[in-house]
Every structure is written in C-alpha cells, then in structure tokens.
Image (tube, one colour):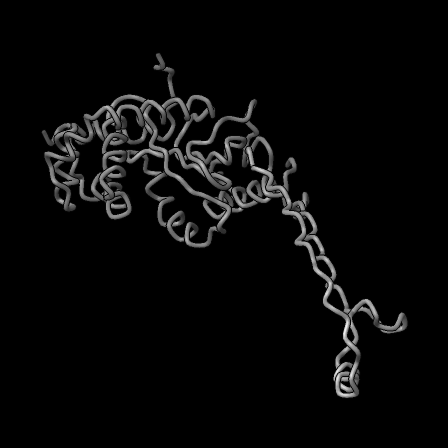
Length: 280
C-alpha cells in the first residue's frame, strides 16, 4: 500500500491544474369606511358667570389659533444615501491577468449576498497553502458577502474527497474537519489510495460515526451535490485549483507577482464593483 503514496501526490499536483470535463448527462381587502355617527345637538343653556369664567380658562381650539402663530415644525424627510462609490480604476487589478470576466454571467453556487466561491481540491498543495490566508480573511467579510467552498470534481481521487467534503457538510462536521484534511493528505500522509473507506476512516478519527459517514458519502444527496459542483466548475470555466468565482461573473486566481494578498485584493475590488452595480 505504501508504494501508492507517490501516485497520490501525482494526483494532488494534477488537481491543481486539471481542467474540468463535462460528465452531465395580494389581494388586500379594502375596508369600507364606517359612516360617521350622527351627532345630536345639546340643548342650549344660558351661560352663567361661573361658566363664562371656566370657558375663558380653556385653551382655544387649534382651528382658532391666530394666523400669526407659527405651526409646529414637521420633521424633514431623511436624506437618501449616495450610491456606493466605484473603486479607483488606478488601483484596479489587471483584467486577463489577476481576473477574467466570464463570457456569460452564471448562477451562483449558493444564495444570498455577493458570493465568493473557492473551487478547490484537498489534493492541491496550492489550496492547502492558501487555506490559512482564507481563514483569516473570512473573519473580515462584510454582511453582504458570502463565502463558499466548492470542491473540484474533475474525476479520480478528487471526487472521493469531494464526497467526503459534502458528507461532512451534511453531518455538520465541515468547520471542524476542513483544514485537517489538507494536513492529513500533505503532512501526515494518511491516504494511500483515497478510497471512500480510507476517507471514512479519517473522518472517524475526527469524531464522525464511520458507518454513517460512509453511507452519507454514497447517498443520493451527496451524488447530487457532487454533480452540481462539477457543473458549476464547467460553467464558470475553472481550469485549475484554487480558483475564486465572484458572483458568477468573474474568475480570479493567485499570480506569482501579487501572491495570496493580491488575490484577496482582487476579490475585494470585484466585490466592490458588484456592490456598486458597475463594471470593472
């Protein structure tokens, strides 16, 4: 079994640059106003001196206030907020280098907010190296931005790891186990074949019920998620991992001259463009 480890590392490096291949087969009711109640005039009585004094002490009705008396101030309507400012083009990332505009906008992988989706692979060393940066960056995201992982399903061992990802997500284990899979693959060298049994063994070592986890990996729900991830990568033209897809419109990757921090700057620039409703 140990002799299969070099093969697994070859799969790992290939996942970082492997292209995806297509396997798809009011009716609100109006309430009528009630007629005003009929008022019966009170009998007229002669005014007594005491009554005159009491009447004089009462404040005059509003409609009898002298015309020169200023009316109560009416609060001004709130001033509408100005539209978001577009990012400074002078500081813009380079189109065609730091990011690519997709030929056609695509549906996002999830719903809610401006989506940043990372297409990644547990067998990709570049994804493993980027993960600490992503962990810190996620803590700074504004409320209108949603971040999602999308495991690359390009065939081979990567598909089994993608099944493990989705099973962990369904079973509520993803936050606890995500970083550990990178470590198990690249540091601890726990995977020799990347079979579903091996992957289930790893998640069991992290607290999962092994048989339940294995069953979930083979479930229809996970298969559907796997196919959806594959189609997402195909539609958004993902050619390597890690690739960031911003709101189904832009694809961004790490470049040698700008590194991970440059990738985050590119993402934030494109998020700002989306927020402003403009174009880069």
